Amino acid sequence: MNPLLIPSPSTGKAHGLRPRIEFLPLKRRNKEIGNLTKKRQRSNRFRRRTNNNDASPHLVVNLSSSPLSQAETSLLSKGLKFCPTPPEVEQIALSQDLSTFYRGIRLKEFFLDEPPSDPEPFYRKSTWTPAKNRVPSLETQEQGNRSDIIIKPANKGSAVVVMDRQQYIDKAMKHLNNRSHYALLDSDPTCNFSLQIQSTLNDMKEHKHLSEKAHKFLSPTNAKPARFYLLPKIHKPGNPGRPILSGNGSPTENISLFVDYHIKPLVSRAPSYIHDTPDFLRKLNDIKDQIPETALIGTLDVSSLYANIPHDEGIQASREALTASVHSSPPISDIKSLMSHVLTKKQLHFHGSALPTDIRHSNGHPDGSFIRLSLHDQAGTADETHFLDVTVQKKPNGITTTLYTKPTDTHQYLHSSSCHPRHCKTGIAYSQALRLRRICSEDPDFSFHTRNLQKHLCARGHGARAVQLAINKVRSLPRSEVLKPKSNKKTTDRIPLVTTFHPNLPPLRKILCDNHHILHTSDRLQQAVPDTPF
Image 1 (cartoon, rainbow, N blue to C red):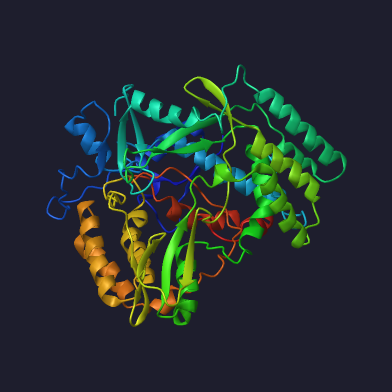
Image 2: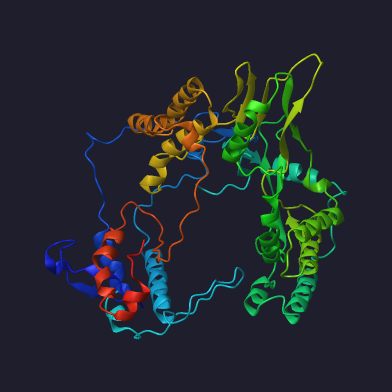
């Protein structure tokens, strides 16, 4: 068992300047962790009063015939990302996280003398751990369930949707009964699909087009059918469902990652590619002075785009794009074969039925396009349109932009009482205000939407003063600065300690920093772990 670095209680201080370190087995480690996890109590005088009656009827959309109790509605109104605070730290989980952290240090030391090399993008993660006692200093210092309803997030707008189970099944079967795209099968073809994919991978390995690690990673193991589910579109009449196919564990899961890895760079090279809202705003800013007064602005939407792309034509288009990019390895013919497997071997399970499907995957925003039409000598104008979360307006002084939200948007931000790290909650106001600063080209629009933002966040339990401070901080930033693309994040070789958050966790970061000098008593560990973990 790995020890835990814990200051000894005999020093008389929780964290002295030079505390004596005890190295404990797992059983005693859990006990010491429990001693360090003291509840942080605050006086009622300074405790923020929260509004317990925050179950707005717009936050929970009950489409089912079963009424929800007040407690159920109150819980669901906090959002599907809300985490209730456990009464105690899960000490077993924390010990497992610490063991993973210690393994990272051992691996860094074990491979210290290996020459640096770029890791392969496709490989199965190993669970091997170097033997102990290689470096002495490292070893000595170290709601109730309900079956009658289905709860899903809304496709757009962040609301929580409650549906009758049978109603949900009926909506799903309406999609699956479309025999143009789905067919009911007599047996599960998962094993046959896995064998066909494996044969292609074996050929690639035999011709030296795949490394041993990549071949092992891509090979389907214990595969299972994909799972079909719906996200309700409450912003449309009749609340239709958006079909989603979860391919986790399916035969094509890993080869789809391989195909995506090689064709994804091609997408950003397309002239029509829009990465996200900031990218769209930058492109719009570049052409805003080129739009004539007679121009009409609008958007195009493609109905059932994925299902209407013929497989052969889609594969051929990808092949031509790869050829134009001077792609060399692996051969384009191999990528074409794997792409064919991804598109044609997508069987799914729903409500006990196995069906094949031809749902496609894509990148960027292929189902919508922003267009600019220049029309002359025609009556009528189109002065406003919506694209992504932006409203584009044509005014006498030029093109302006402001925020667009769907009428069904519930603004269900993370609740302030959710068991998340503090910075995750305090950063919401700043990040959302920064988003508004980018989108709103005129200050009056920015002021209007930030007032609404403050109202929505306060309704979720966030402090009005903290929200206002974040908004004022963003208000001082020039819009031209916040529209600039972010620089690439710097990579780091530091070892992270990842654990499940709890407000009563001991100060792990301080403990690690205070005792990091112990690792540096070994020359090898000083080279392997020069910086403090994070």
